Image (tube, rainbow, N blue to C red):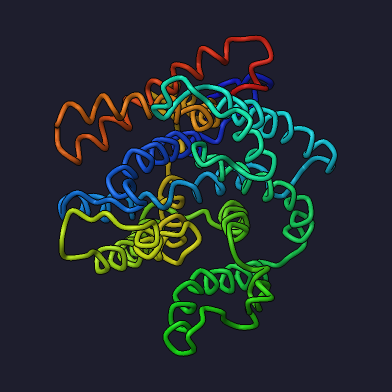
Length: 373
């Protein structure tokens, strides 16, 4: 395997993770370039049936983007090979400090057509307890920091558990990915959405501690330790998972689409449409694991790998700052009137390129790891 030195080591790269991280970063940006086609107005705005279909069929596949980021990090980090203090210190330097820097940037720098006026005081007040609405994409960082906090606790178990024990955990977790649909069933049967011990006074139900993104952490470790298949077996397993996962994600969204357009309703409609879109739902979980397995087939770098290496290395910085670029780019591309699909993809591509250029320039500064990770 060819070596591509990082900023702090000359360790060999796991090539497929660089390709995967670069692609997943583009997917995230594309998700945000699709959102204006169904979010707006009073909360939910869809101009036409054509827009609704593009949103349903493209964005449904993109639900793999965030879980893929979780799996790439987990594949590299689990089980932890350093002491807990060192692990936390490295995550703080590479993840938390850049997150704070860019959270403050979104609080202070004008954007979103504000005309140069920024309610800094209100922004900082929001930031003290949660993310700001106009930097909502940073929800991911809160989540991944929580995962990092838990990794030193989970790591000793992963070192000791048997293959069958790990499989049992993954199977239970996969069951929990269907709980949102059981909640909808409970709403029909009982009139409330709580299941298996959940109640208005208790959100910690039976499967609470098996649910969420932690399953992707265990799945990534399992794949690294136990899955070393050839191309034929990998494709035989992965493709059906991707197809089944896509159908479970896209069809519920599509089948809920209203008949009349344009649609301008409250955000409740978007929440209802997105029932199958949750990143930890069954469809997204199946697709994510399937896509991860396919990328794992990549064993060697190709001629363009140095570009993907740079995209991968700077992906966190690109993610943090891309909204500043996207807002300006999307407004320009939308004015070209090139159609829904092209507007989505062209604006995402230009945003990706622009954000990468900014992140690359910032990476040349002293102490840049505290800015772009």
